[in-house]
Length: 206
Image (cartoon, rainbow, N blue to C red; front, side, top):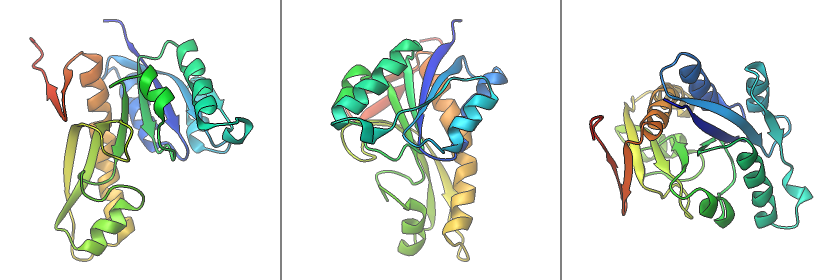
């Protein structure tokens, strides 16, 4: 099977990027990271890419007159590397129309909460402060909203009474590193079908 070429957009440490790279190198998923793009020149994600011989590209948003122009530059980079799926891994910008139109239902994100609860920043802190008994993480397709696209996979993480934000974040992150590569695998195998708000996971024989 020909490997799916994945482009990763990241702004920070890129631990989910690392999980996808590891799964690819182990042969657990029929996909490979073709390029990593960051809006932050100092992002650890770029260092992770370089360590694995993956092209690491910094695109500096202030150099561009508009968000549309900035995203067109990203699209050119992703096209150059033949990207079929875009994964956001701690990418701290809302995806705009240019990228969404270029990659319809082909952009994934992971969020550290059980969507639609606790969207946006500091989701783990929101969960702890709200007093929920269970939190977790969600892989979803990206649409024009914030953490609002169709849900692909979720993992549940119990919230302990003694948990602070950091405690819960660490346990959620463990699950993120499991379900994100799994979502990429399902996509690469052609087993995800979007039907309105729902993502149908097809059986292998389908």
